[in-house]
Length: 233
Image 1 (cartoon, rainbow, N blue to C red):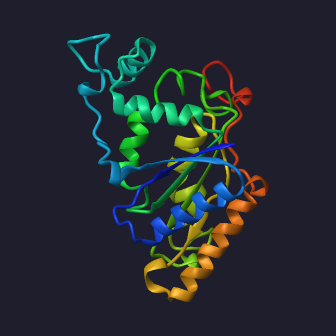
Image 2 (image 1 turned 120 degrees about the horizontal axis):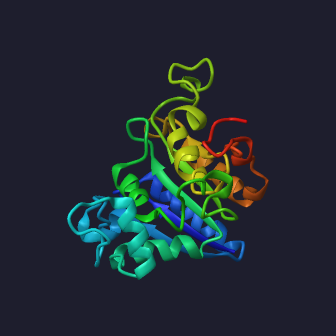
């Protein structure tokens, strides 16, 4: 089994980085091959631009999705993007470690998604959800936030977390390109708890990874339930 982990935190000694290390060590102990994109350490550029393409389908006007397809077909994507795409395509499981910022992923991770999840090989037209280009691969996330667990859920002030606040990531990004999406591991209130509490969270993460194949999957749309216009049948 090959795991590719995308890590998005600027501090090497952070709790999120400790989660990264736990995940890597658990998978290695299970006999998996693990590769990592440590976005801040790499200095990954999250800003998409015309410089992402060595040759252009249309030189007078940038349509990024069109140029992604052309760049992939002609092998003219920038080396930084080619490396990340290769990691994704080689992986059986794609994992993410990050803190939640402003109801979302860190900007550097959002930029990684925009530049790496290519129109064409990974999605396009009706090749989404259970027909997406990454169908057959699995994904998970381990994420942190300052809020308490009671702030989330149907009665919480912020509403649901994975299927509400972060739906854009789990369904609108991972599920959209065809990945099977495990319910995430969430570490709540991390900056404000004791070291003992954080150690227990890491133990919980170890168990989550060891039992990953038994974790529940999130529900994503079934394209067969929709007609050629993507209206529900």
